Image 1 (tube, rainbow, N blue to C red):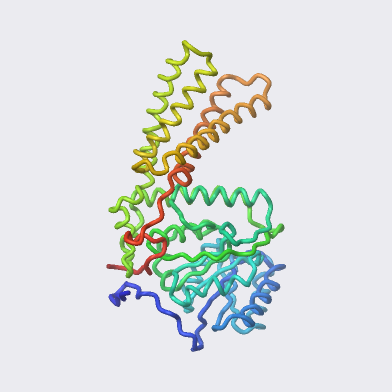
Image 2 (cartoon, rainbow, N blue to C red; image 1 turned 30 degrees about the vertical axis):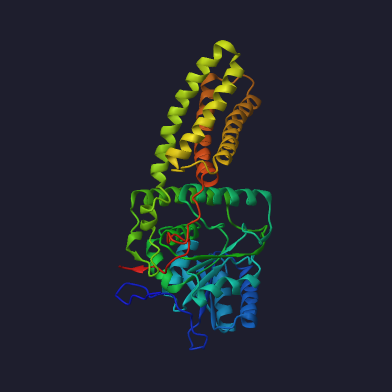
Length: 431
């Protein structure tokens, strides 16, 4: 382990002192907007839990995001009644904006946040922050999708959460399992290096911070949580999902073009993503997508040739099925070698089996879209059919690429000699 005391560079992780010096070791931020009903029970329960179980000095910060009800008055009353509770008022909305402001100004070496509904069992709080206090990890997240988690929530939210994390794995190569759980912590020195790079001020703040941390070589610790969904949650799922997808596109574009200055983050333990690229572990998203598109064009031409060859000897449906099957196998083989750089015969059968399943999903999506159109309209216009097919095929293409990237040809786990562990080093400025 080395430390670098040069200006702008963060020192290597150290175990935080246990002795109380007046400064809290942990600052838990509770961002709120118009939460006059839930705020007091949340803070009282959290304060009691920390007082009873947490072995270090702590602070609870209520970050009020421009509330228009009596939330500011409730927060001020809690700050007066309870030792270690304070209230901060922001005049503009945005969970990410609140966390950025409070974390940037906090003097506590470990920073955390949780949602006001306390959907996460508080018994996970100490396991969440302990690796940060010991210096073992840089960030910690509660996960509802990892083994050991126990979750009670509706099917729609479960589907949206899993689909979103699949998109993150496929498009941004994210290795963490749950980006949206409102239960996270970060070391202050790491936050100081990462927060200036995070642009989002809303719900995508968490995801953007985690993606940048992972790309910068930070070690992310995951804690399985017990989670009971709040049926009265004010989160608008559809709107939030749309904002998150726009954020994914923005961050993906920035990473693909090199617009983010991640190369300025020093890694005291030598975990530099540039070294991984030189070793040929993952290729860039843009390059992979271009390869996928090129293979797709060639596969389409191959399919047309096959169909033309089979048609004189078989009916249209049989010729179509045979041509699709052979071209799908060839497409998977080409993407395996050319798009994702997988060499050798290891795993080839598994890749082909999964590739056929992905192909079947895309075929079901397009066929299902036509079936839905036929159900909705007795005699749809040809132009309408074409528009539905174009939209369905675009969606199927994007889905197929993401599934190939995240499931069929996932990035292999790093070896001990590649310095590519998802953890790695504490970032700092300069090198």
